[in-house]
Length: 125
Image 1 (cartoon, rainbow, N blue to C red):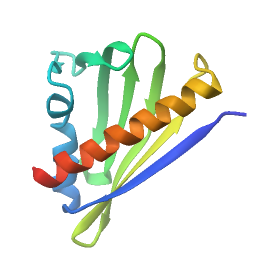
Image 2: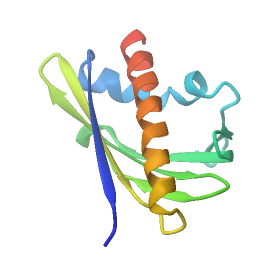
Image 3: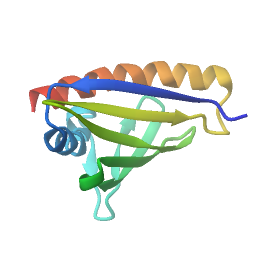
Image 4: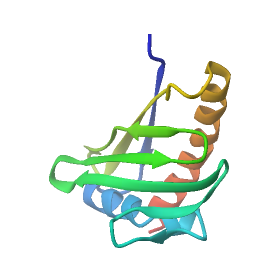
């Protein structure tokens, strides 16, 4: 059975503004982040050299992405959902096969911290 975890945060931004802020967040979260011509962000993450690529659809609030580092590969469903003058950002983390349950739990905790940082960036944009 595959393990997964869903993280939801509410941000004080309208959906379109939150969506745009997330797309621009990588260099604000990882100072060495650079976007390549193929749409992949490259940077140094907690587990070595990392890459991130969004597969977005703004009208549907879809910000699915792939994340690859030296230890694992993640396909991450992500949605930005309208909540009045606010937005809910919903991220589902499915355990990559190459990670143990303990490593997955550690990553979920690390990602939770990153999501708090992302929330602050979105709300200050």
